[in-house]
Image (cartoon, rainbow, N blue to C red; front, top):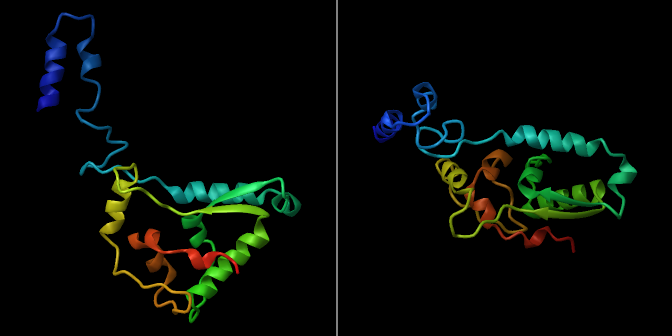
Length: 170
């Protein structure tokens, strides 16, 4: 109602603005293309961007990928979905799979995992949305066996709190 009142005031003023121009925009406080009806920021299709980036990356030759002059920065969350997890393996064995994959595919690499401060960030709405479907916390140690499917594990909000120290090769 407040927005309609503002528009009527604007239309009633003696300005060169045409009434048709004033009333041609949506009556919303936030752009509906960016925010849903609950006020949460809409999600993008990161999978399309990731697919495009992965395919662009594979266009390089093997020699170029292993060149010491090239440094790769990989999204650790995206990397989690890149490799299948065999049943009956420990978290250490799964971590070793990732380390071997990165070492064989790229020469110089930094893997970055999603980590945000406790203050307000642009990812707050995504964390809230994910929190609605998260399951219980999982105790992770190198010798513990994987107790669930990879997709269920990767959807947990607590994954960003996991100590990843056992990923470093010994």
